[in-house]
Image (cartoon, rainbow, N blue to C red; front, side, top):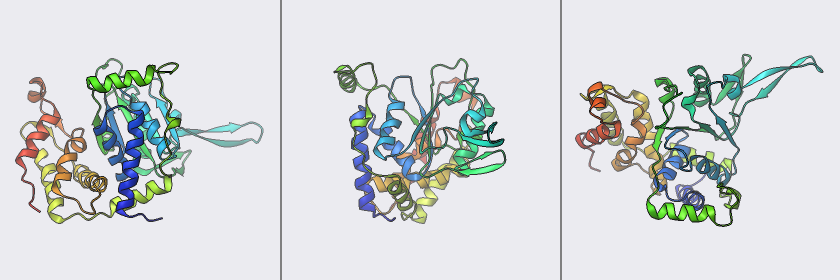
Length: 321
């Protein structure tokens, strides 16, 4: 199946509009989730509880007619609870494979940093290879496959830091903030009007497309034109993170690759068949904020990665095209 850039653009806009009917506000967050989906990557979402992270994933899954699974990460969660396991059937006297919740299209890994490193590592092969190995046998996941992991920046007690290798597997790190006053007014009105409990029903949203179309959009995104000057710009930004005095550990090559992948998706959302330097600049913070480690001095002074990346983007000259 093939799709034109214009068709992909229209489909993306329709999905965005439908999700916006369920998720009040958070336009930037919705866009970044779509960027990751079309670029074929995974997303780490950071935000306080109750801001609609689960609702966002459920709404997206419904709009693309995809399968949705949710895993609540806890300290006692085992790797086999994520991937699946082999179970001996006494009747047949054979081992039966019980596939885990990762066998889906959209996987919500809720509070991923509450599980120990061994369980977190169970997602590494899944995220990188889109396959699971059970009892030495590989099982491929059906595309499209996307992990959306959440972590709470406030409640640090009982959490385990995500290892750098796993952080690097996430294409984007998205921060979801509190809605403004008008958006919160609308949110409260929507949930309290004729609703039992505080859950919104996403079944009323329209199904915009199917999984095959999403795969076609991902293929179209990957084939968008990128000028060598734009690639040089992305590489220069990432290499600058390795030389910046306030950064202890800079981004690796995955940062450069991620910039180009997400910039392609950004161009597609804009209805363009080519990437411009502004696409790189607009996605750079989300692509790189989790790939750098600040020096102890800057952390003591209260600075964060977004602040440093803004300085880098101001210093690195963008090509004129």
